[in-house]
Image (cartoon, rainbow, N blue to C red; front, side, top):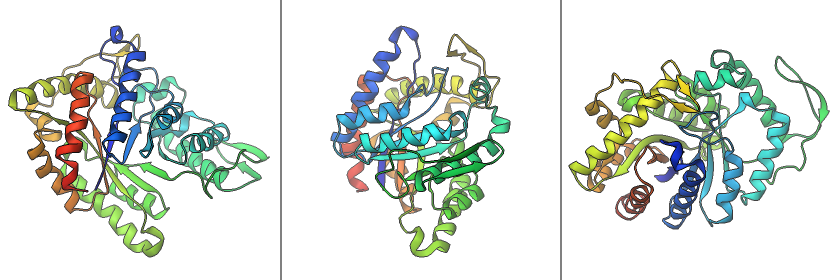
Length: 338
């Protein structure tokens, strides 16, 4: 089982500045490379202070210039808000500028308020995403492409330059529904998912959807991977755990506002709203624990066949504490799985 650091930008206060936050994330990426992580992951979100990364491909290139081995995953690029004729060229350039270390994670968006402001309401984005994905994969794999669809209509064109590899960088699909995972795997995509609020049965169903498809594909599916995202942090003791959970609780009070709530955002800052989930329930859904406890909990994921754990340690703790957690995880946890 491989490990990925999710560089999920969270600006809890404007006084800290986005510039400083991105400097922190850059240092976390460099440390992750030095510590032997498989990859780092970059979100794409606009107009809000959670997961705040409007330029993931640009940041991927910056990270590549200062690292040697680490893969860089977009987690995820939001296809419905881009023009695929332009985006395909940007993806190809990023593949080249990162030395072919880019993994293109894609999705249709997650926050209703954000997608509505960007002109692609979430309730209408599924069809646009599906067509955008078809257009993108065709532009990456073929020359002289023309299209007649519901969202794209264009005459024959070729995106230049052509990709380094036959079909461009590997594509990873963000999907939660087990049957959706099955269908996307059958199409030849890597899969990125998460068990909502730590729902164990959902996770087992997600893994089953992936494995069923991969087994049916035989040799053609042997290299496909399943990545699972979880909030995680290495702590020293119960007191330290409580402190980190308090940060996480505030983070998710904002996250819930835009993910399932009313989407109240003022001057770019998501309002903190009351939560129904208790602190204990939150603790049960996250991997905030000592290294020994982390090994025990991650063993479950390893045993059921998860290929990559995407670890989100950026939920409000200080940069220094986060760097320490990244380092300790690599030294005290990763060796048990690699």
